[in-house]
Amino acid sequence: MDKLIDALLEYNGGDWGETAQDIDEIYRGLRLAPSLIFTYWQERCEGNDKCCFCGGDLKYMKEKEYRGEYLGVDTYEEITYGVCIECGEVF
Ligand SMILES: [Zn+2]
Figure 1 (tube, helix red, strand yellow):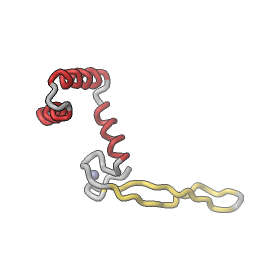
Figure 2 (cartoon, helix red, strand yellow):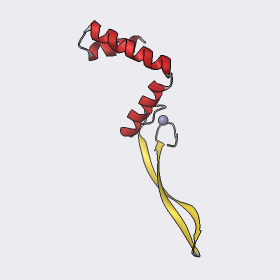
Figure 3 (cartoon, helix red, strand yellow):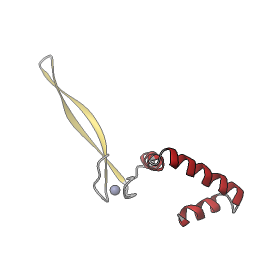
Figure 4 (cartoon, protein in one colour):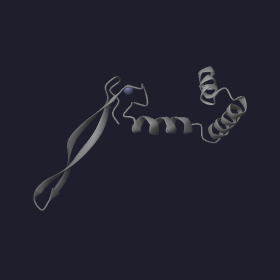
């Protein structure tokens, strides 16, 4: 928590009033939806190709997934997924 408060104070240029408003906003948000901070973190990680569990870099892989037969021909769909190079988590 100290890290979070320090970061907010620094972000707000040492403005305690602004930081008090931010803390209040975070407190209300987390009280209504405790998982909200993780959802925001996941979105940020996705946008930066990072693993939301360990912060490692994601490596993207492509794979053809079988989608059944259509008019006698096997059909495949190319899917892309990310793999964390640190912990191996698949996204
Ligand atoms: Zn990871």
